[in-house]
Amino acid sequence: MLLIATRNKHKFEEIKRFVPDGIQVVSLADLGINLEVEEDGESFVQNSIKKAVFYGNMTKMKVIADDSGLVIDALNGFPGVHSARFMKDYDYKEKMMVILKMMEKKEERFARFVCAATYYDPVGNIIICCEEKVEGTLAYEIRGSEGFGYDPIFIPNGYDKTFGEMGEEKHKISHRYKAFTKLFSLLRAIIFDK
Amino acid sequence: MLLIATRNKHKFEEIKRFVPDGIQVVSLADLGINLEVEEDGESFVQNSIKKAVFYGNMTKMKVIADDSGLVIDALNGFPGVHSARFMKDYDYKEKMMVILKMMEKKEERFARFVCAATYYDPVGNIIICCEEKVEGTLAYEIRGSEGFGYDPIFIPNGYDKTFGEMGEEKHKISHRYKAFTKLFSLLRAIIFDK
Image (cartoon, rainbow over all chains, first blue to last red; front, side):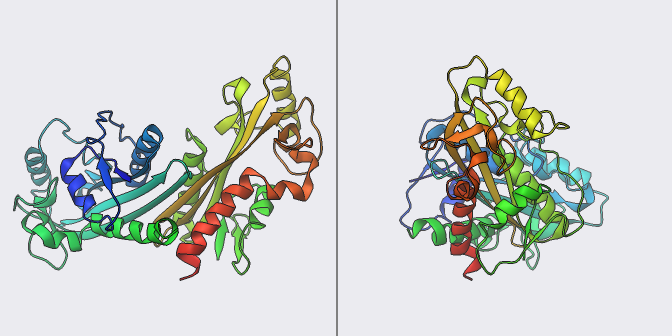
């Protein structure tokens, strides 16, 4: 039994698809946990580990957690680790419109999605964290309604669609796919086979 | 090639003995690195990861780091994560004398040594961290000159000698032995065999 430590329903569904067959997962909502962790770390890795350790110590369950965000070169990495906190009380459509406004005059549109995926076993006292990214560029307008978060303004390299226009295809190339695939391949080797 | 990210010569020698045969290690001193990381985390795990990530990103080498300390129940966990920072400019004999003074009237003398051992691969973007502890009691006086740090005032459960009186025996039961043995057994499964 593995706790996927997110309060974001979209993220829960996305992570669930990367969990190997035969491992049962539950969400924070399933456990009735409403407590939020302050994501005040300086890096995706720090926030991801902080979340996993917090919910793992609370529940004594094995946990996976994720911290991810959009990093835009022309904005010195903004919103980055602030991706969720930025305009916290607004929806993503409004957040994306502000980002597009900030990028209006910018020709350099390099951006990347970064994901830090963490496993924490509070009994074995083991933390494993992998960080992965997918490179791309920032779109000029909001395109597509698939995915969640900043997906509709991010075009991965080698594609002309945004993550928001991609559907299933996204889950074969995304930052979250790469981070969790690596994490589970490490876990398979050391944990699940024993 | 593995960087053991400590500036403490004793700790370097201790960790080196837990590294599996065939893996070459270097120290920060070997690389001429004098920069210090501020150990300002709230836990051994945080400090250990902070050190590993700092020196790994600096050198692009695979790194192992450790953060460890003595946790005394009757002092609400003190010195704990402050073990190194506490009376930083004094030597350990003076630090231990102050601790013994603080413990003079205390009958409950439960204490434990805790070690968080971290591996960081800055190219693969993988962090693995294990925390282990050894339970024991606080001695009434400084005993023995083996080991380092607070070793001469810590008596592990099941023994009547302090770590400072133990020599080789310590390295079969210590917090550092347990944490690094676990860490290397995880690493053997996922990294070194491939």
